[in-house]
Length: 110
Length: 114
Image (cartoon, rainbow over all chains, first blue to last red; front, side, top):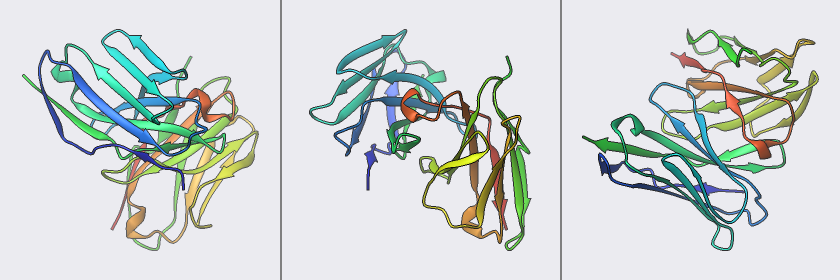
């Protein structure tokens, strides 16, 4: 069974600090990785995708991928209260479906 | 260009009843994927439809069934509802079947079974 693991949190971070969210996956053949943000009661929103080892930056968000360690992370710089949400990691499986972690709840404290 | 739309937004059903959820795909998209998200968990893949045929199915019983229409909109039907079917049901449309490009979801349907 392919698995994606995340710490459920909550992770509490002061406003303006860096939030670091982590995800591990079991399938060594995985080629692409996604971070979704989900506000309470809403559907997941795709915020970052990463396909190659290393870092990918988009505004305040940086995704980091280490395929050898089967580890992908999301850094949020200058955290804002509006970043408070659950962050879900997803990995493709069987070509057509995504396997998801349970998500990490992030709380940004003003 | 409109995005993915789902209806209804909320629904309350009684155990044993049947329910139909609807999804209108984004213009130009021929693939629809359905996911179930229970409270506090990540989404679970139900099935995918491509050009009106089921293209893949997750670990859900046969009482979960679907349809895709010629305009690529889709329905999810659940028979003999159980309490554990209470969840957020998500639909995503795409222009290809591969999950390697990620999906954009509709706003979801919140189903409560009592």
